[in-house]
Length: 265
Ligand code: ZN
Ligand code: FE
Ligand code: FE
Ligand code: ZN
Image 1 (tube, rainbow, N blue to C red):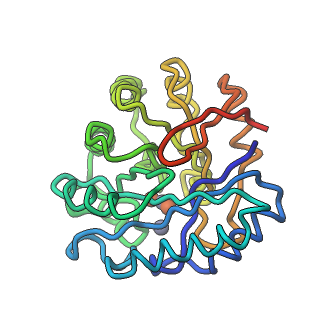
Image 2: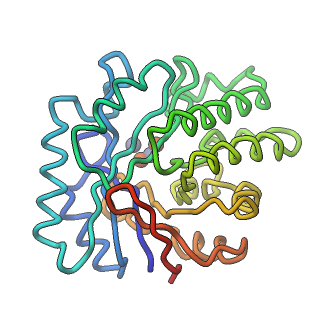
């Protein structure tokens, strides 16, 4: 089956299209299962312009339940969330996650300190930085996300490459270390095609990272990170080809935060 577990709603202030439009697109292109995963509420000081407000959380759940009730007989629609890992916010995040019966929660790293490194508005801050050092800091955060025990899936696993900043040499040690933590946490890795739309021009994660994940038997999900309906399932032929080349035959689906492997079709 082909599932897309990463799509947004207008509640996050930087996505367009009602959930119904994402669902219709998924039906049009023949996906077998989808999940909505909008950016979760966070404490007021954290990135307020790119996520739902806390008082919109119930509205988000209701939006997903609405499409589940109207389209669920044609397309399984999971209740997901894109969570943020940021040290110090774990208690807040845990409290939010208790408030609904999620099928899965993605754990994404969007900040290094106060720097929103994946936001196009702040790419100037890459200048003068040691790329190897920011990669180390990024993958330390991924390890933190894994150790937090809050999340099921690592979102866009090497998004630090988004704007094309590449370390000079191999980073297998960083990848192995981070993926060992992901494995210990029992999490899956998201194969996220949105990188194809950005200057790195590459799926997250890289082929190398996916090879190491395969060797460690870390399961994978698929996500387009759609912020508009026409992005649903975008790049999935490439993603599925990459998965097969690396030796993956299955992705995992989630129901009530329980993973179940299903063949890639
Ligand atoms: Zn977003
Ligand atoms: Fe993200
Ligand atoms: Fe996203
Ligand atoms: Zn995202």
